[in-house]
Image 1 (cartoon, rainbow, N blue to C red):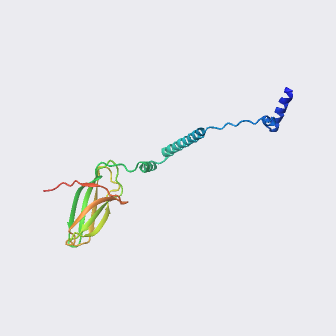
Image 2 (image 1 turned 30 degrees about the vertical axis):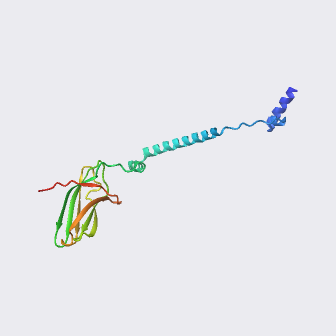
Image 3 (image 1 turned 180 degrees about the vertical axis):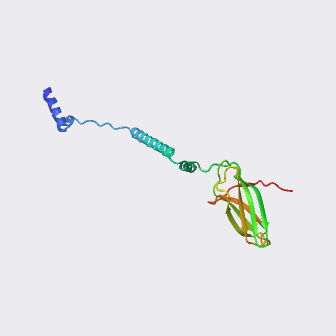
Length: 187
């Protein structure tokens, strides 16, 4: 009888019928603990992030340096500077009957190139009212570290109309560029 039973089990398994159900025995299913599913999901996420990080390292290693610098700037933000980026080393104005001119020099005090820096001149009238704002690029772009650049503005106004002016600096996009007055006073 044992041989007949074994033959039935083999026949049932070949046909696709579970021999336990054929005899009325219901198998007990084991439930996995919930923490095991969470652990599996976390492991999968860690492996995915690791693969993504490896891909990013590979892309950055093969990318041009400008992409790498742009990505680093995006992730870190601008590099903080110690003190003003520019020193105003020279400033002079020339007044004539029909025009007014201002020229000056600035020194890059940073350890990096300064790009797209512009001088902003505000001209004031005798009453102190703002007459005009003029924006001119520096003579060198980019301005290397510890190097100087000039700016010049000529404005068609009579000498009596303009009583004063101010100078500031900004990036072409609008962000101000700090400066300090480093002019030496002549007796």
